[in-house]
Image 1 (cartoon, rainbow, N blue to C red):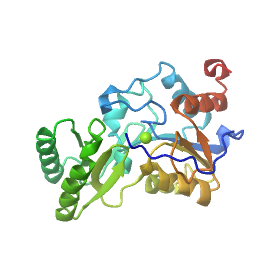
Image 2 (cartoon, rainbow, N blue to C red):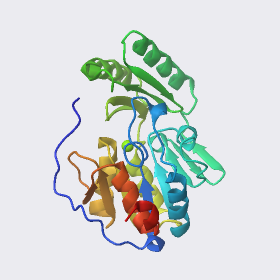
Image 3 (cartoon, rainbow, N blue to C red):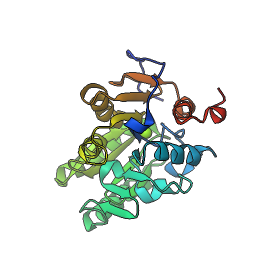
Image 4 (spheres, helix red, strand yellow):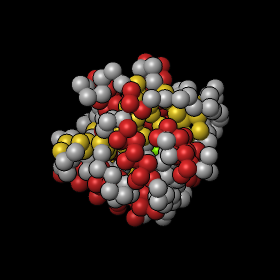
Length: 260
Ligand SMILES: [Mg+2]
């Protein structure tokens, strides 16, 4: 299976940080939990909700999950965590009881794209189509040899749907609304009154996280942490999701749970 590989220059030892002066942004799949064969198959460690709640409290609410999953979907895996969530790469955002969605959320065009992707997956064994409120994903994790076909299919849809862009992520291609990205969402939040002046910290594992890792590391004097192998613009790296959780537990003062 052709995962991106290469280590790149990165510090492994994470610095001490002051959560009270920080804003913490965390990707979910491949960062806090291991990636599974299907999006619904991820296993969530029992102590993850406690960790997230502790980080949220110690940052005075400046903890934000930043995921490609829809907010409603990722919430099922967060064990009642009620903090800030940016979903669908930024096309959805939940703050407290408030929920914002991109204008294309739930639109007829998104529904048609979902129908077409499901029909394509139905005739290509091993592909998984995932409908999102603001787009669609085709996962080829179980059949990596089908990547060129998936690309060609979704590229054609991108050409005929000007309001969408095609993105590559781990073993998947995704159509989502133009201008929507994790880095744009993080930049916007960091300019908001609530987050301005905080030092951004971002953990991510995927190529879709790289623009945000680059911005946090080089433009915002923040701490960008790449989880796992692969070339990266991040200044720091941890080897896997367990190491990412351990680093966060140490910062949160939950060393007992971190086993150190
Ligand atoms: Mg990820």
